[in-house]
Image (cartoon, rainbow, N blue to C red; front, side, top):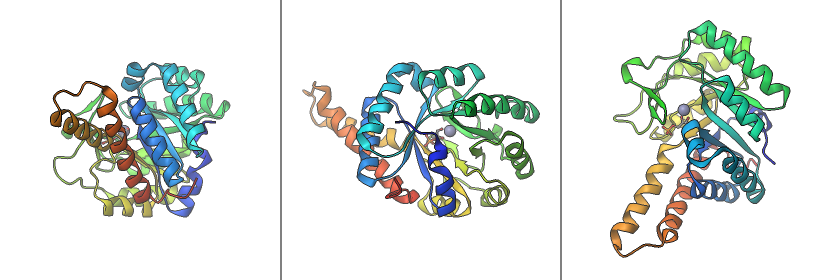
Length: 283
Ligand code: G3H
Ligand code: ZN
């Protein structure tokens, strides 16, 4: 069965590893990610953006995640990624999601607290875990578009009070990563992670995990990051493989002949991240 993130995140923070959120885009992503987890014996989180949900249909999403959890035999959370309002959160919970993110980071600070609290109250009442967000993460992810100039780091004192008031199970803070691939190397503000993680029981969430150097990932985990989101890198490896297969053989028409290798590429990417995050063998 699908489990809330609280089934594994407290252990991750205590033992110094991070659990990956891998976004699902279609069946090949579901299967590639689940196969990686089975191989690595790692817990994981399926991230589903509102755009991905529109693409697949909410009932397909839940059904595929449930089968992936059964097939992989590891703890799996099905998590709404960057939920934009109370209604979409409720719709996901009713459909069978075990976890939700409410991203109120575009609201004024006090309003974000009030709105997040409402989500936490409703979700916790039915055993669903909640992630909140503070600060603005740059880059593009589906509906979410933030210009570099508008990206704003989270203020540690605000992040700490946000958690004290909302009691979210995981706290996403903007610390210099961005959604999508990076143009240069990201400048991660480790001091912010350090300051917030020391005062907050919930693990810190690192969004925009794609393209972050391994060493920076390891350092952030050491300081208190317990959940890391990866989407773009899986997309890049999958699409590069499909492009290669189609390019090599213009007569190829059977989708399984290129989607299958694309799925294998996703699995390879995800297994590499699970090892890097230290979640392998923690199922
Ligand atoms: O919410 C999803 C993640 O933050 C994905 O970021 O596509 O840069 O890996 P990414
Ligand atoms: Zn994100």
